[in-house]
Length: 286
Image (cartoon, rainbow, N blue to C red; front, side):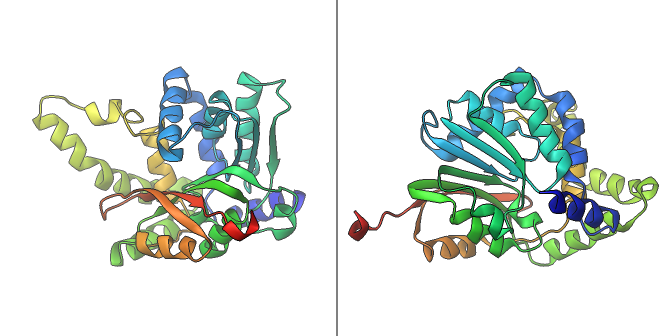
């Protein structure tokens, strides 16, 4: 998968893609037992059933935290892959720390848009891709290819940025500007965005007499074990960037033989809508 590595690096250097892996490699310093446990709770809530004994593929594994969570929850066979070489390195580092000799967890560099690569992956009981496919540059193709990996009667979990119309268009402009700036000047975009994103909760906490409570508790109770600062950098830099209304995602997968098992929206605001679909078994094939 060397070409993927070359492509990723070239796109980042041209300002056409955010270096997600670089951001995740810094997040690894913050990973501890409490973050892993929160990731496990989040994953179980999304999948909606026991993971133990099931095969699991993490499409765009990023930091590798949720691959690790799946493994700790008893995934029988686990495969993590990502287009970004530094993200692949992150997953490998977490495996080294926690499951260094476990041959049932494989990690590779690969692209969900690469049909030749996907043909080598077979089918999986659980296909998981949280907040990834809208960053590929071809979201609908990526969603279709992720769906192709689900076994009969399997589960597909995806999270896709909510379409806010003109607001989403504004953020697209911000993200493009951030990535095209020289590194030393990116703070000119990052810090104003950080202030915009965090001022409301910071002021609210202050008036409640609990300064910085939201910041300190970030990652807990639905926060997926993530880091507030790393998530801000990921959000501001996250490009390519595509969005979709929840009903469009629902219709897309229904046409491909999936039923909606669970939907958690971001309330029409900023963030991801989270979907859990089940593959409908064709009765005639049984």
